[in-house]
Image (tube, rainbow, N blue to C red; front, side, top):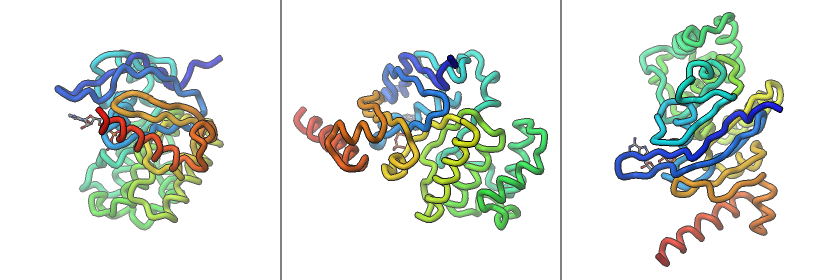
Length: 249
Ligand code: ATP
């Protein structure tokens, strides 16, 4: 039996006075598409950033694909990647240059072919010669996604993968991600505010609040548990109940 793609134990991150992530324990199964939900400031981006090795935990452990992420991140970084609207690619480089630079950084053997294929698949061909900083937010999201797929990652961490995309592009990206995971068997952990997206492409959902996971299950399990019709309604139930609890304190 393979170890899980991700295993975090007592994972905690404190930024001075803010406890962003508080003693999290969870596993993400290989080949699953798991969503991390929660209101603004719940700790989703901080959790993803620690798993990627971009932010150091205050305490706790993170294992990715069987490796300790704090001690041996360089063993596992080539097998994973991430895409986030909060991390910018070098703005003055053209899209083509950015893909080439990251391709070289990742040491992909057939770099030119891979960059050309991803540019084609993610509809970037007409932007290849444009400075990345001059693209619209939605266009940048697609470039970032292409960057994150250059090394054919076994683990893909996505922060709001369809942020700023128009409905048609968002739908197209969701289908692309579904195909990618089906064909490659890759694991995806994604933060999202889009419940329709989560219901459609995720098979496991974790709901965070104040740095902790409060609910977990498949979209269908959560919908059944809350007696609702959609994940959007479940999310609003949780969020409003939390608001009422806070108001009563
Ligand atoms: P959103 O949905 O708004 O993106 P999130 O769930 O991703 O929110 P995080 O960005 O992880 O939340 O933030 C969790 C908490 O940590 C918030 O209270 C935030 O203000 C705080 N925080 C995040 N990064 C920093 C930082 N670099 N310095 C100080 N506090 C931070």
